[in-house]
Length: 466
Image (cartoon, rainbow, N blue to C red; front, side):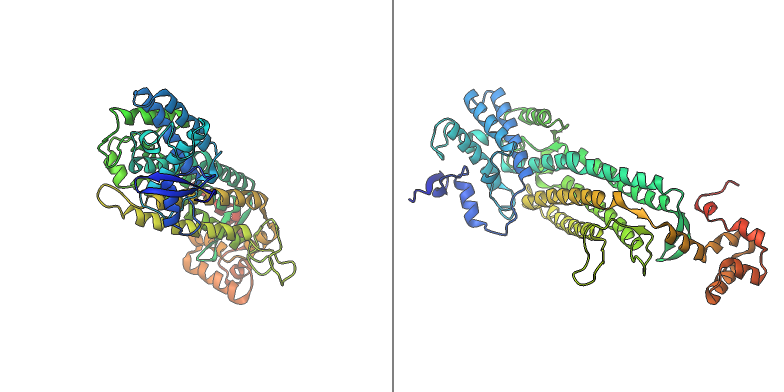
């Protein structure tokens, strides 16, 4: 054997493991057998598994099934992992066994070897703690891996995504307030419609995102339920009595999140409907964000040959050949992120429906897509907010020009002179390239005083008292 490698053993026999690596035999076999893409198990999922190992050691120690030295060794090693001190020792790809067994064992082996190193024992000796018998005590991959996805997803949503969405809502609320008295022409079917304020337009964006926030937050309740203590199929075989209640209480204490034991562990281990639901709400956020950035880039298009109602921050040159061109790049980046998240959601939905009997074998895909989507949406929202939304300015002259030239202001005349006469005014104004006032006077349907009283764009933006 080369000095670069050591021999480790598992139930299938010996295998060479790189000398400096803290992983063991089962991790090494997975590296050899699943060299598929560069997509690695997200570090958030590793940290969640480490928290589970720490909690399990604490509970097993309390239940007298794990001695104090082993408990302390596991707790210390798990804390180091959860704090990101050993990230390089979790090399496994997403595309592995559908249960995530190799990743669960990767964590078990690294904890075992950290403990060996700390106690002056050789790596791979499984002293003082064994990766299966001690680190994995009272657990199975089938209950720990989905629990880790729940924990990592909840933490990602609560601590990362929702706070950023809240800041996005605040910016749009501020814009809605600032723009409340800017009257512009509304549009339906991409054609001129009746007036609206720019503040009202922004308020729609704000409330869409606020609704998405509430929907995402609402998915958390189902994810607070953990299947820990279910072991291999949900019956609890090899887990001590009330282990499930104690370990969820310990995880809740560690994370300051109200996790609880799932009353039916069979359901959460065989299916992952709560995770599929959470992913669907991330997709719906993506749908909302894509609609909003499409609105913004349409309103900003031009600046001289388009709508040009909004001026976006000019962050970088937009063309390698056209001097002075600036593009709505934040809108484009967000659009790509949203499209990607929609695709990831489709994969999670298919994976969620693909379980068989007592286990769903798409767990790494579900966890990867969820956590990747949370990261994508968080980063895109932050970039969009800081590099574009905060700096958007209305083009007041263009907004006023479009409003003054609009034919759809004639809608306000319909209750007084009827739909047909109002249509006739609009057609004449368009065909003869004159304004509504001139067309109305030419047709003799109203005098100028009555016309000015009825055609008041500001009064058209909110209901009138009867």
